[in-house]
Amino acid sequence: MQETEFIWFNGKLIKWKDAKIHVLTHSLHYGGGAFEGIRVYKTKKGSVVFRLKEHIKRFFNSAESLDMKVFFSQEEIINAIKETVRVNKLKEGYIRPIIFHGYGKMGLDPTGCEVNVVIAVWPWPAYIGESAKVKTSSFIRIHPKSLKADKKICGHYVNSILGSLEAKKQGFDESLFLDYEGNVAEGPGENIFMIKDGKIKTPKLKGQILPGITRDSIIKVTKDLGYEVEEEDITLDELKTADELFFVGTAAEVTPISQLDDVFFKEGKIAERIRKKFLEIVHYEDEKYSDWLDFI
Image (cartoon, rainbow, N blue to C red):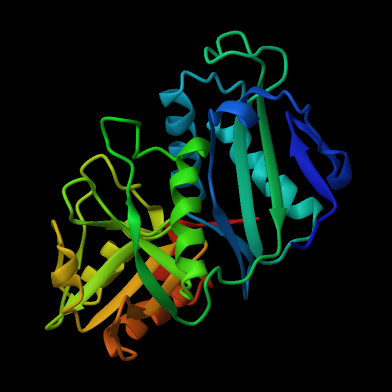
């Protein structure tokens, strides 16, 4: 990855190379932390952060689900993100806020551990590429009665790692998880949409799919474009009959799926129209959605 100069660490900007933690950091061992992925985009009027307030609201909500006390307000974190982007002279790229239990105590109960908040930023192009070859994972998505699966918690992403490694070993770009009922859930770090006969569907949240902010944005945008959007259970067989498939997410943005297992999909006009509109929005080329953009 491409390093930048400064990282915001518990209220102070420090050099990238000095942002270090102890090997006995609690969250490193047990996964009890929360994070966000946010993008900053270059526009004709300066750099903007996409849906920053919504991301930070979810960040705090994820932390609170672990009983982690964030010793900063949401507004302070928003301002710190903008400051970190500015000081690193980042015009376009990725923002990673993370909150985690630090060094000082071991054992599963983190009560009494110090809580650390860190913000890092760096240049990062589209996560997958122009299109994705996807493999249905042999692993299922996290059961909603096992973990708080709708929160963006660090430890949950071991499930994502397993799915991603499995897919890439088999020559695919990304994996697709089914839920515990056998219905389509999501990718390791993306929500999924299907298009069939001009109608757009995406899986219900049901407490086990991350309520993606890009997902929410795409639902609103597609409705504004005049398409019907339904949130419902989708079987894998139904998904494979789609005319078009695409992933959405902060890192993936809007990425068409060209292959799912042994089924191939042609480049679709509707997904491309949605992708184009999304890119117009994040680059401030459609002022209708300007309230989604925070200028640096």
